[in-house]
Structure formats: structure tokens, C-alpha cells
Image 1: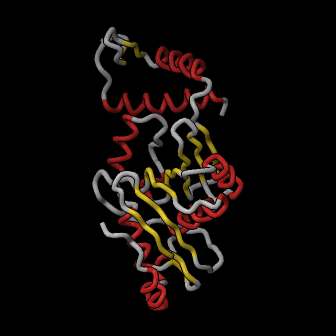
Image 2: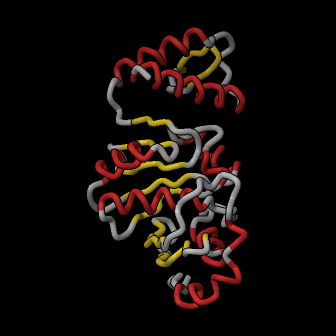
Image 3: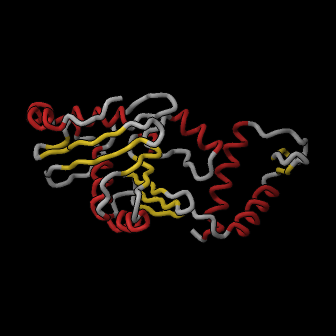
Length: 238
């Protein structure tokens, strides 16, 4: 896909097309020129342009961002919260970051469910499903960016230092860190939850029902993911 930068044309025409992108979840911000420079880690595509001017969000640019931030598994798109872009731009400005790498943006419910089955820490009702979340990486000062984002109280901020990325969303204000500390406590908590849940570990290392030895159903596996999240929270003291 060609480089997405039509800012001269869009700035000229913005007075005619800027109004519709005041999404219901977008937090109000002072009118100003806002721009971002991004690269999509999965597609290799780049975006660089002004998405907001004095009149407000620029509709054609927000449409481009919807495509740029699409679910790369299915290529489906959704409207991206302009407040999320403002949050990202503010975080980048706080550490002088010229560009951010996008690791995850919009996810369909199906993609999110698939990731929840195979990745630790994926929320069942993730803000990614609603176009209100981004996982980002900066080339420098990533931890400083995380601290600045939390101070802004613009939504959720997740810190993943071992994986080297920050999660930003415009949901309720909350913070969490997933860094692998307290792993022994996590294993003990998981052991307790497995025992209380009537589960066992087979000789092949699979979770099975303790009474029959049957493999878990999809519903049981999803329930186990929720237990794992509970165990991680208990181990970390949150």
C-alpha cells in the first residue's frame, strides 16, 4: 500500500468534510493540528499525516487510519476512536518520539477469541474489539512513555517490559504490568485453582478433567483462561 500522506489536499478540503468523526467515546480535546507517524509491524505499511485540524478530526484521514489499523488477520476494519489517536499523539509528544510501531490495533471478536486461547493476558472483552486500543512500541524511552501515559489518565495503560510494548486504550482509567515477576506464586495459585476446579495434568502435559481424564471443552478452556488471569492478579498482589 502506498504511503498514506495526503495532508495538503486534506487540509485544503477539511472544512467540507471534518465533522462526522466525533465518536461517542472520543474525549474532547482543544482544537489543534495533530499528526502522527506510524508503521504497522505486521503489514509493513506506514502512515504519516495530520488527522485533526482546527475544525476537528479529518474524516478521510480517519478512514485511512481505519484501514491502516485494521485486523491484519481478517483485513476487517472499524471506526477508530479519535480520542485514542489523541492519547497516542500526546504520549509520543511527551517523550519526543518521531514514530510509533503498531503491534496490535483493531481486532474482530473472532481474532480476539483466538488470541485469548493462545496468548496470556488477552482480555475477553478487550478494548481492541471496539477500535479503542493500541499496542505500541517506540524506538527509545518506552518506559518513560508508559509513565507519561499513566500520568495523563486518558484510559487504560498496560506495561509489558519483557515483550517491549505499551498498551493504550480509551476505556476506564486503570493500569497494569505484566512482567513475569512472582512466577513461583503464580504457579502455586494455578495449582490451587486447578485442584479446586476438578482438573488434572495428564502424562502428556495436557489439562484434563480429574475424574474422567477427558480433554477440556472449549468452554472449559475459556474458563481456565479466566482462572489464569485471576491467578496472575493474585500472584502480583493486584
